[in-house]
Image (cartoon, rainbow, N blue to C red):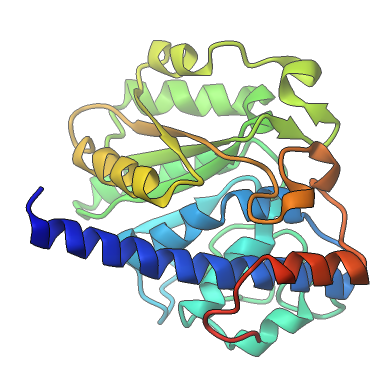
Length: 289
């Protein structure tokens, strides 16, 4: 890598890091305001969403539900809606001030993404775990049939890997060579009832996906340099006969010291003092909503 390329990459990482800090502020403020929601994995996946939407995803905030002529993203573990809503708003899909309506009556920003109110950026209702990969496989196959050169992305949780539908979709995608698909697995080791290894261990999850015929890469989802390199690697491996999965290690609650690494912050909101503590650790870089 020459010096100019290195400088460009460093500048990109700094820019994405600044956006991530602001998005994490959005997350804790949104969940605190309604005293409901899922901050833990939202914080852990922030860097992924920011990198995808602000650098890698070919998308248009002038929302096209069919996704024709652009990349598509599906969120399977829909409970981490706070991070997605923040990134969508800061990408121009809807007014930033609407984040203040999160989980409130008649809001378009429900606890799990929904399509009924036509919120731009949302193509499916999600949150019933295990379904997102099936939808993404179908969307990717439709793009292949229509000779659309764009890519479909999907994010899943690690506890979600305990769902049988995931493996049906995985088998289908490999058999039909759905190679315009990049799945990402948020591997934070936590789910609502405790550590994944205690609830139902995934054992060697990398070996499982390889055995199902997928091209498997691994990344650190809380290290933007490593993560962006992994996304670029995943993109370079599309259209080679196999679907691609990025097994992305993250820490639940990343960015807020008292939330890090525990399932206890999977689905509870901070109180006033905890919010103040969290915000003191997160720089306001773009302006709060």
